[in-house]
Length: 170
Figure 1 (cartoon, one colour):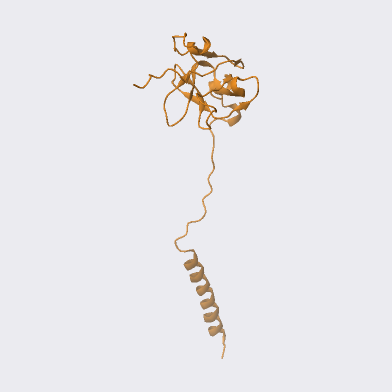
Figure 2 (tube, helix red, strand yellow):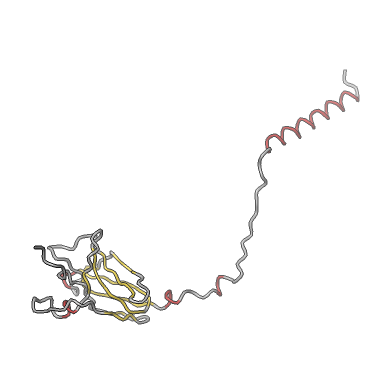
């Protein structure tokens, strides 16, 4: 028979059981953490790096000493001060380029040596005096030419095509 004392014990048991069940369910769990990230300087007022704004473009014709230019060939520009290398594998098909294949490479302002390479081979086919001389056997200098890139300007006809400055195998 249910009397007041038994009802209180029953209700207390239900409440205590519920508390224990909920506690067991959440045992070992941490409450979710809310993180607030505060930037000391608003992002809109941060100054971008100098080379992000001060860029120019190097443009020229690609080549390779075969019937075609392999897909692996990269055009790169190495900053002569920082030694930082910027490369592209993107090609532009246009009759204005020698062999109808060209490139455009955006780089920070500075002075560069521009070359092609075909990884994993580390040989560099530079834009050199040999190229500007006409790639002729009568051209004796293979000295790379330093290309100066200025802000918002394109330096054209930079053709890294000196694939011929390798010693002849004996």
